[in-house]
Every structure is written in structure tokens, then in C-alpha cells.
Picture 1 (cartoon, rainbow, N blue to C red):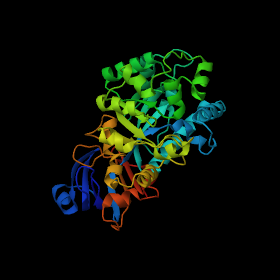
Picture 2: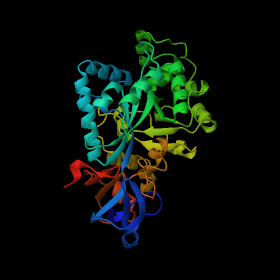
Picture 3: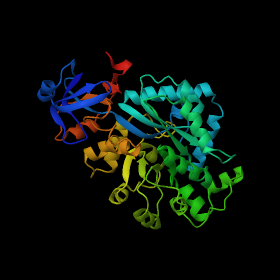
Picture 4: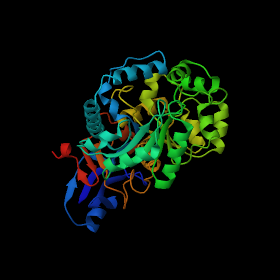
Length: 405
């Protein structure tokens, strides 16, 4: 099969006017101008017309469990208040509700051009029941909390492995330093190295998390202490400092948020492991967190990706909206740099730099197309300005059922 479009955004070099991509099965075998690719390859040709063809977008941090909570939780005066509010709403939900929520989230994300999603799943036992149509390539990260009792990461991973089917992936996600113990983090890190899987966690997300660990006080400190969390690690160290001090992070981790950082933290980062960082622009704005230190983190060589977080703190699952929001807050970034955060950067974070996020020979055929007029000087500028639904989507070489028209 050959797919032709007015512009092909490869993310592996310059965009190609009147470009084409040739596929064999679920793999890309050739990319170039339409005349060249047509001359080199036989088979059916699909002309997408006035569209830009690009790699499917990769959402590096999402909680599909909470899709049904869109608009259900009003803005809170504190991050701890939001935690208490969402926990209260969760008591009203049954497993069937979460299953519907996951399926609705997958369908919504696909409609916005996402072909791969890193989902933090609090109920791994539901994964095998999910009807993933239109199909997305999903990394199921089993979210783990041992605040109220022991959790064995190896057992969680074994159960998840029984439910995850190709072309999906799996990973582990200790929730955060205030809900997951040092032992759970250490076991997770060892398993990730042994089984070559990605791992993720929330870290330094809020001012209250900073107050808990650095100052040994605050609303979050009081909440988890009341639940029964040991508090010996609180007071005198930042959340990031605690994790690095205990050697719990390496280059395999996807660190979500990383909003609260001190000058001392940046000194630690300068000499520490280069893990991946996931920023969720609109959720960040919804909470009113400390401004994200994107320029400093990029200058230190950290790989920055984008996610939507959950719909308990966002409006929809559109990565195009995340890119546009980031562009407004960071206008000095080039459009292609922002597009990289939901393609090549996120692919690297998931350990798939040669498989996902680019249109080049050898990569899997995860593709989307959006309308393209050529009105802007750079193709990527028009692409990330797109605000509708993706008009064409392919995952693993198969056209989405809802896009066959």
C-alpha cells in the first residue's frame, strides 16, 4: 500500500511536499516524494489529497479510569483537597463504570489523532476486558499504592502480563513518593531493568508535596499521616532529592510533572540520571501549579514529552490542544520542537525510538492525517494549530474502523 498526501511530516528530517509513504503489512518500507515512492513500489495507492500525513501522536501520561469524571470535580483550593474530592467520587464508581470510562477515553483519544497512549491503570484486572475500538497502541502502566498495605510489584506485573495483548505494551507505576514506599520503588526499578519495561511515577507535582517532604508539614503531610503512612522520610529533603538520595531513579523512568524544584534540585539534576519528563500543560494550568521549568530542563538535556493527564483535571484528551497551550506559554519554541514532544520524544521515553514517532523505513505504520493548506511558512506550524478531529487514522497498519468512510 502507498499513501500519498500534500505534505508528509516525517519527524526524521524535512517535511516532504507531495509526499508518500509505502507500507508492507504493519511496517513502513519507503518514504519520499510521491513520484519516487510510486516508481519504487507496487500496490494499491491511497491519495489523501489536501492533508498532512504524520506519525500518530503519543500521549505520554493519561489516566483513562477517570474519563467519566470530566467536569465532575470543581476547582479546589488545594491539591490535597482535589485528592480528597476525587477519592470521594471514586467510592461511587463500580468496575463496570471504570471499564466504560477506559473505553470512552480510548475512543476519544483516537478521535484526536492519538495512536499510542501511556495509561496509568489503577485496575489492571480490567485490562483484559477492554474493548479497544478504534484500536490504540496502549502501554498499560499498573498504578501501585502501598499506603494502606503491602504491594508486591512482581505479582502486579505478572497479573498484568496475562491481560495485555499485542501490539500493546506494559509497565509499572508506583503512584508517588507520598503513596508508594521506598521498597516498592526499589522493587519496581529492579523489575524494570530485569524485564526491560518502562516505569513511571508522579513526582514533585504540587507545592503541598514539597511542603510535606522538605518542611514536614502541610495539608498533604497531615492527610497521609492520618492514613498511617510512616513519616520518617519527611523534613529536610525535597521530593526529587529523596528519590535521588535513595538511588531510585534511572534513565528508564518517565517522571510526570516535576513542577516543584528548588535551586538545589537543579544542581542534583545536573549530575543525575537523564530520565524522561512528562509535562501536562492544560492540567498544570487547571491546578495553578508553579510554572514548569521547561527551558531549564531542556538545557540540562532532559527529554520532554507531553500528556493530557486525566479528565478529572482537563477538558478533553486532545494532544493538539496540549501543543497549542504549550506554544502560547512558550512562544520561543519552534513548532517542530513541540510536535517532537508527542512523537519522537515520547517514543524514546517508551523505549521505542526506532519503532514509533517517525515516518521512516522500519517504523510501524501508526499514521494520522489532518487538513493542510500550506498557509504557514512551516508545515509543523499548521499541523499543531489544527483544532478539530483527525480525519484519518491508522494503527499497526490497519485503518481505524471509525475512519473507513
